[in-house]
Length: 357
Image: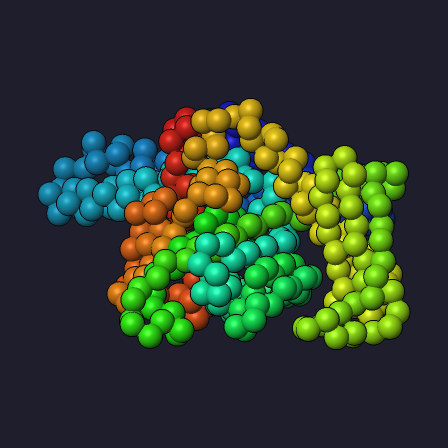
C-alpha cells in the first residue's frame, strides 16, 4: 500500500510540473485533463505527507524517550507520543478511506424517477411528498432540479414524476435512495382512523455521457403528438410533444414539457440515455453477485429499503438498522443525517476488503 501511495505522490509531482509547462497551458483540453487528475490526487497526497510526517515524529519521540532521564521530561515526552499515536491512527484510517476505489459515477448528475406503487391514491400523495423531500434537499445542496415528465393523480399527488438533478456530487449523495419506500399513516380520506401501508419506488440513475452510451438513429422511432394537460385539454395545437421508442430494448420515453419539439426531443433523448446506461450497469452488476449484496440493493427497485411511520414520527432504514424519530424534519428536506449514515456504512463495507496501510 505504501508503494501505491509513493507512486501516487510521484505522479502528483509530475502533474505539478506539467501544469507549469507552456506547451500544456497552451492546450486547454490537455490542461483541463491534467488539472482534474491533479485535483483528484491532491487530498490523498497531502494526507500521505501528513502520514509520513507523523511517522517520523513518532520515531523521533521514541528515540528521545530512550535517552531522557529526567522524570518530568519523560512524562511530557510520553504525553506527546500518545498524542502523535492518536493522530497517526486517525490519519491512517483517513488514508485507507481515500484509497478505496471511487465510484466513477459519483460526480454525475442524476435522473430521479418516483412512481406510486401499492396503495392507490395514498401512494400517489406520498410520491409527491418524496419528490418535495428530494427537491428541498437539492435546494439545500445548491443543486438544480428540472422536471422532465410528470403524471399527476386525481387527488393532487403523482402517479409518476421524473426529474433531472444537476450539481456537484449528486449521485454520490443520492445513489442509496433507489428502492421501495414504504409509508405507514392514516390517510386523509380514512374516516375510521385506521393506519394504511403504501409503497413508492424510487430510482436514481447516473447521467450517461454520449461517449458512454451511443444511440444509433436506426434503433429509435420518434413519434410526435399534441401536448395535453389535465382532463385532456389541449395545451397547444402543434405537434410539439415527442415520444421516442428504443427498438432493441423496448424502452419508451416521452416529453411534452416544452413548447418546442426540438427541446422536447433533446430532453427525451437525454432521458433515454440515462435509462440505457442504467440497463447497462444492471447487466454489469449481475456478474458480480457478492458485490450486489453489498451495494444497497444494487439497483433492485423492488427491495424495501425504508419505512416512514407517521404516527410514531419514525424513519427506519432497514439496510443499516438506522432509526430516527425526526420523520417530519427529514421529509422537510433535512436528509443529510440519513445520507451521511448510509455513506459511512457502505464506505466501511468497502474498507473491509482493502489491505491496511
